[in-house]
Amino acid sequence: MTGATERTLFEAPPMGEQERMVEAILFASADPVTVAELQSRMPHGCDPAEALAYLRKRYEGRGVHLVRVGDAYAFRTAADLGYLMQKESTEVRKLSRAAIETLAIVAYHQPVTRTEIEEIRGVAVSRGTIDQLLELDWIRLGRRRMTPGRPVTFVVTEHFLDHFGLESARDLPGLKELRAAGLLDNRPLPGSMQKPDDEDEANTGQSELFEDE
Image 1 (spheres, rainbow, N blue to C red):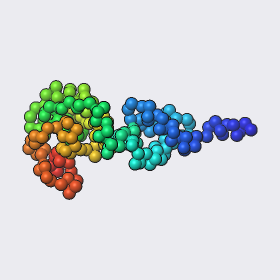
Image 2: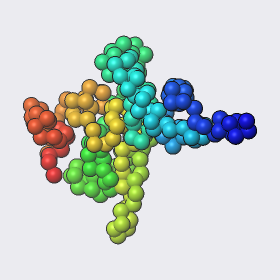
Image 3: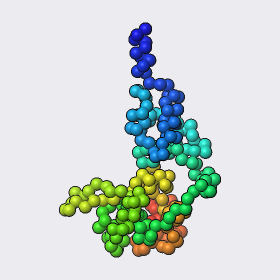
């Protein structure tokens, strides 16, 4: 009898119950949750990664979807139902042209140093522009380069990925998405950063923002 009791204490809950646990944690969290964080909250022996896979399928076609944001997971409103949330949405403050160009360079060339940003833009980048993007949590500090002076690099944040509904930086938006989000006006980007508006991204496999490297 004792042996049976011990097995019960240490056996993981059924997968259906694990799904419920993951679902509850994600709904209660204001920020995306990683598998490691789920593991630390759930009973011994649980497999949150497997529970996430089942839960993700369960929410396919529903009003909310379970999405991956970087290395974390969160529930988000289905993209085709976004128009229903317009009354509750807040107006997004537009970034300056310098800020959006800097953000675009970081997004598509990360990890990138300030010097490299200035080389691509062709003009100096003010500290205020970098500080603004850091304050908005669009970019963050990356690893230092193993070069003389060990300059710091910049990369986009999970907040940036979450805003555009991206799993990783490999799925970055183009000009149309940035303009639709209110972060970019209709003026063309300068020089080599601009591609023709009518060019088919599907044929190139590249974003509109930059020429092929």
